[in-house]
Length: 267
Image (cartoon, rainbow, N blue to C red; front, side, top):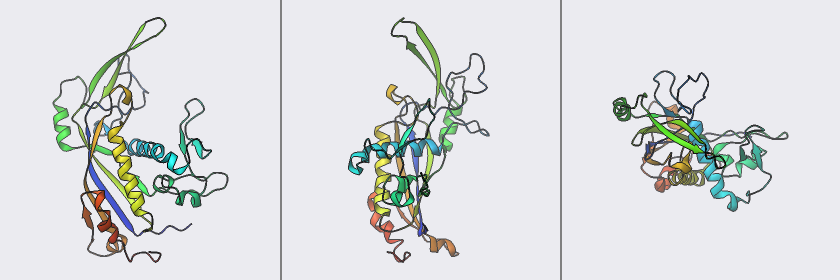
């Protein structure tokens, strides 16, 4: 299946932590007395960040659940374990590229072919989100004994023996902000509006849910602010001058989609 690119939609904004955020890192090379559950950090700057995979996975999961009844996929066999035998992670995945093209979930987030079916590459790319300059400066001044983060002490109580199991988790403090970027490939004009509206829905769902781990205990409440949405036709990228249309809200989609009119033979 050939996939044309008519252009790109670039979405930029900020993720603001309203409560402490924990996106866990590997616990390899843990020292005695160290944090039980550290956050993921940039290996060069040692600053915490939000992996694009975490943000994309949360968007997909929430959107799948929101649309499952409408799509008729609730409890269906179109689910696949992408985890392990001991740690199962079930997601909706179409088995062929043809099915994925008709599916609002797989069309955005991609699917891997099954039983001879072809892969359908994702239209959406989600970049890693890094701390803003202001947040780096503010977090450099906090006195927690950790670099840019805070300790969170918790006690798990055994319901049978009442024995306490104290643990220490690392969190990005409330008030920290991250720059984020999403890139959406415009491949046809018939589905772009639906796809972008579903992206907006996924973003809204995260703000009403949580990001990262331990959301049921108050972690990961975030506000996601879209600052700029830019439509860039591929034809302008071939020229010396890039012509782009900028909007501030996904509610202004009609003017953005007009940018790509005439660039598709199927439009």
